[in-house]
Length: 621
Image (tube, rainbow, N blue to C red; front, side):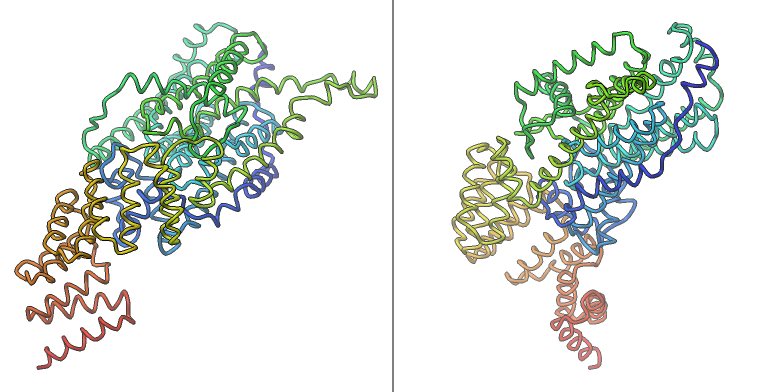
């Protein structure tokens, strides 16, 4: 290959800044509606709603980076996700849906910008870089990733993975220290967003060894030797920074979750292999779209056919280097592989896990169809007519057929995620036979006091999975609302036979026992709840209240003080209880301090004002 041809192929297209505006408009047209959506409660309650204090009043960088992804026990470590959640809560003034939806939307737009720049780095023309980016952004497969708040980790991972490759390409081609450090920073951020980022250095190495030599003579071994000879001290510096970031990440991860006792289960891995053809079929032909999708033979067979087609075009000689095509397939398989090791109960696959792998497939296809557009313009001009082939060029099919269908489908699919009711309705329509949507819809109906509909959904939950305690808990919650405390106690006891490690069940049963007047039994349940989890502030507060109701004042203050410590002195009820007990024991200065701290949080609280007046009266006496 001549030197001039090398320069021509290696010349990167100039950025069309107007295309960034198009990218932004397309995303907003599809997803701006999601800002008004409610929480659908699948993992949003587990992560956000159940840990409001962690993301608001109890926030600290130390806790964020030394806590698991689900705050409680979990083998997942994603501190950047939780940091972004805390920032959302700080800006919005609490855990409100619109803040998390808006952040996801902004991140998705930034991902679109970054992907456009990445496609330009792969020597794709401006038009096809835009089309490839829009195919990614408009794909109905990505709706769940944008609208569902806990997909934040995948959004951050995708954004900073793409940015790390953009910076890495700049470093290889311009050899600047600034690009080296930006590459290391983007990789580090991606790693703290989600564990899947450990794949990035592997692809860096493959790109360096195999992809760059595409412009050399067609001799892979010579190309690899040539690349090895090009290794300089800057490359070792980048490798060192990546290793250092990995070591730091592993240390903090160990502090957060300790030793990972997860055991590789061969049967689960074999079952999850269906993710490969399913992902391929859904990336190119998204259909049977459900909030909680299931594997199907049609998706599997279609995915196998697509894989064989991709394998054929990879091995076939074209203008695209074979190593280049292999690199894009490896991108897909490498980022998809970590999802095969985790099998969720009652859920076959989650669409947000396909967000990053699909980029490799999109680039591979765009690179394949781009040369087809290079038609002999002189011949067309000579004939003075446009052939049918010219009218059916790939980029016109994408613009006038595929993109409109994708955009409309994504817009409609996004509306199935408005609230738990719409999610469950869509799950029923598209055979998403999983108990989660019905469990969440039953909770929604309970909150609106539509108990008949709630009971119907609870029965569906128990039919799908009778070994899950959620249905029993929601049924018990209904009985609590109706003051049927004895029935609620029975249901909570049944739930404890299924799950003895959930402190909420003990706490709820304690409240039911209090309703029947069994304060001693309630106190025993609170003790059991504290034994399960000693980090929940309101459990110690409840135990203190129960002790006071039973006249057990000896160590009641220690419970309230522990509750105050765990809540970081940010809970008005706990501070008020501390003040009241100290006032009872004659510690008026301590009582006054707690009372004034509570009044700063709620200056108009009448009970606190009255308590403060009583305390001041005793001090004056």
